[in-house]
Amino acid sequence: MRIVTRTLALFLMLLPLPAMAASKAEVERQFQQWITGDLTPEAKRNGISEQTLRNAFQGLSLNWDLPDLVPPGSAPPKQQDQSQAEFSSPGAYFSEKRLQGLAATGRSLAGQYADTLRRVEATYGVPGRIIVAIWGRESGFGRAKLPHSAIEVLATKAFMSTRKDMFRSELIAALHMIEGGDISASRMMGSWAGALGQPQFMPSSYLKYAVDFDGDGRRDIWNSVPDSLASIANYLAQEGWQRGRDWGYEVSIPTSVTCAQEGPDLARPISSWANLGIERVSGRPFPAEELQASGMMLVPAGRHGPEFIVTPNFYVIKQYNNSDLYALFIGNLADRIAYGSGAFQADWGNVGKMLRSDVLVMQKTLVAKGYDVGKVDGLAGYKTRRSLGDWQAKNGLQPTCFPDQGSNRD
Image (cartoon, rainbow, N blue to C red):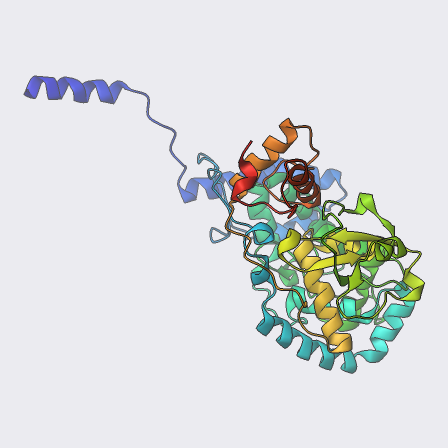
């Protein structure tokens, strides 16, 4: 028995060892090599000076506390089943306590900065209530702490994260900010994801959208409220905000009108939606100036939640954060700030607990049947919702336009 054991031990010693993750000290050494041998040459080709690079990277080390890190020698995290607010519990996204608190503070600050907001709206065409709502949602009206060095975060994630290319590009953009004199490396503070200042811009967005609105010669989205508000407005304006139009309206869609008509590619005049019997839940008519303008059906929870006719400006808000629920949150918060309105009238119903992997299976099944679900990614966007509604109708079901456990059957 002892001979067998010794033989087995010798055999195991001869097997190739599995790849082991490098020690933190070794990874730090590789990080410094990456900065000098890989990133620095690219930055110089992009016009970044030696002085800026020295100021940005002197004494820099990795931040091991950030999420989504993949150190050299380790495997990326396995894909896990995920539950998304958009198709598991969308109502939880709209915390009434949080919305009421943001609205109360937003109303107070909208009054305090009324003159600035009027000038911003005149310049960019974006209503002050929308600007203030985004300001509140992104950084608590500039009160949220920004505890991280943006250069440290971006460099760490550009070197070892699940989205290295994106963060590398943002790191180069941050170096351009330093090179251009917008801010020093030591003062460039941001979130754990590298988002900067009160508007929570990534560096590339800062370079494109940030403006100096207080006239001091600097685009200061950390300390200047006028610069922050105008920068948010400039972002939306450049992304296509239509001056004079609202974001959208909560409506009631008759059961005789299929929910499988949503999406920006199925826009029609708002008067056309009204002629189908779609009415505002407030009981007020659609504004006369909106009737001939385009509107889109939106049913983010299918027939299980609030229903909307939205304008193209809704999709401009989504450029800030590509989520239907985010844009609805901003719209609802803006209305509370300006008009004292409350929660959406329809309840967010019980939509089950489908995982992202479940929705992915459903999407693949729909694609196999010839449906266009958009990106097959496990996220139930408008193309997935309306394709599901079409499938439900063709199979003798009442269309709900929302994934449930029965949606994965053949």
